[in-house]
Image (cartoon, rainbow, N blue to C red; front, side):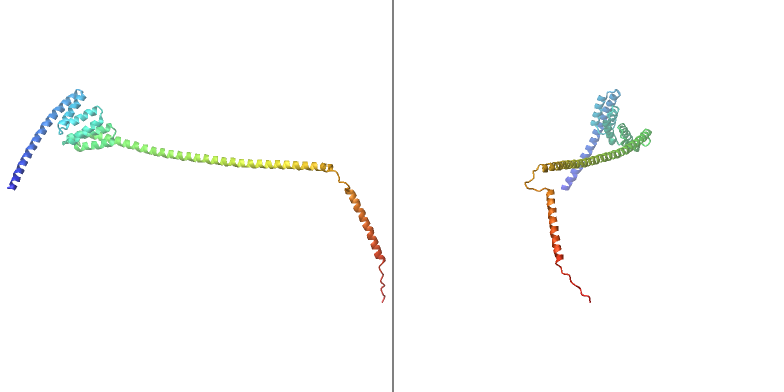
Length: 286
């Protein structure tokens, strides 16, 4: 009995779910129809160049049904024409993701590529055009835009490469200039140091020269003083009075000569006496 009840409830639940899905589909269809009508109103406002009112209608249509792909696509076109590219890209992307139709997807990605081209994002433009061609390989306009995007991308890459090379060359030149400046500063420093050493050496030599001059001057002064003393000495000696009873040099020499004569006379007498008193020895003649 319990099993039977579960089965009955399960059957009733499936029935209710089936009815709900059917109602949801009907409701969605109704919302899509209303959204489509509002979209047509927006298209009319756009043709009248009333962008603000058209934008309101498109937004209402989008909020009414997420199945409406035309409303975001047309709103993207309105933003694109007013050069509001960021908003335009968002709406084209929304249309491309919602759409299940390849034709609609192709148009959405084609226009996304156009936005990237306007923003000079060529690499992204190439990918957008490729996606558009996957949904419609026969579209020649998309193929032409893809070729143009590739050409612009290559040109951009070449310019970037040249800029990088120029930057590297500039960096190398700047580095070389810095090295040369540092070497010049070092040379200037060494030169100043050498000049300082030379000045110090010259100063020492000058000090030694000054010292030598001072010594010479002192010697000169000393010699002058000595000469002055020598010049003054005879005069001082002349001025000194002789001691009492002091003999002169000549008197002393005369006295010594007299004494020597006396000694010579005495010696002669002694020698004479010695000769006189010596006995003569007779030698025998054998």
